Image (cartoon, rainbow, N blue to C red; front, side, top):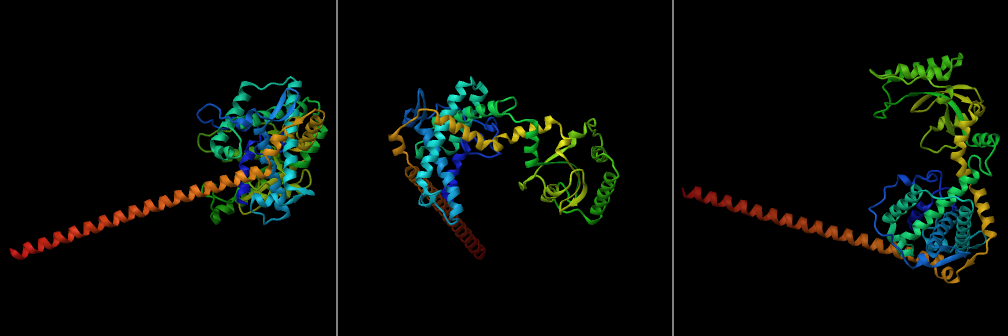
Length: 432
């Protein structure tokens, strides 16, 4: 879905899962500080920045932020629509689809209004709790917004979203993240007990100790020669038998690392057993742990030792009960899972706060910036961009053709000159 993919660029605005209803594990951390800000210029604004879409007391959500929520709603609707009809290929087709018993347009409007109300409510909760954003926090969301707008500003402008609106959206997301952490983080009102944290850990992860032996050359990624592979297999079997005989996996890991030291290299001191524990996702994410390991750990008994392999690795692995892990380790991983496991609960809580507010919705804004208008603006931008790219390609082709023609002409003239010179030389020779 080409145009849905274009619109999906807007989802980079989300700073964390559950705060504004979008995001993923990968962009849940406040990683915006890693984004290099473009050279600072005056913040770009438009009329939507000073036009209130929602108002509650002295606080407002601007029309620009509301448009971003419409965009996010369109993306959500697109995701739902393609599950109904996988052949959908445009935003117009998304709007023509009924979702959850209502039109896609109404679904998107409800989504945007609810998201905006939650933003308003969480901003008020942020102030009520006495929370503040540090200078570093402010720099983070401003730089992140500038970077996003530098990359996709033309698309935002086409839909009526200014750079200021992107900043405001990110500020609201960061405030909501702070509220979330205050309530659900360690010591917060909704902090989980260690038993609940262990149960959540067990739902998402396996704990293990392992030794990994490579069946490939780790520099070229090519399979090892047969003689080298045979040596690796013998080594893996030896460590496997030692593990079965009761030797500590941490000791075996330390022993293996010692045997592989290069000249002049030294190992750090042997740490606690827990320092060698590996935490493995129960869901195969396709990019870190091999599938054969995940599948084994999902079905293996606690404290069992096995030797498993695929085309790349031989792994000697011992599955551990999470009871082997300290409260600190479990709590650290739980904090990483928080934005995902508590996303819906927090969203529901923010909704309840918004329902306690007396919110005024601007009919002018909601009737002007509709899903249909945003889709039409996005389509127009997409078509203009395609035409611009086509013109650029056409100009490049014409330029290449002109250069080729000039080169051929130059070559022809050179050949004619050489021919004339040869004839002249032949005449002089004959005359002599």
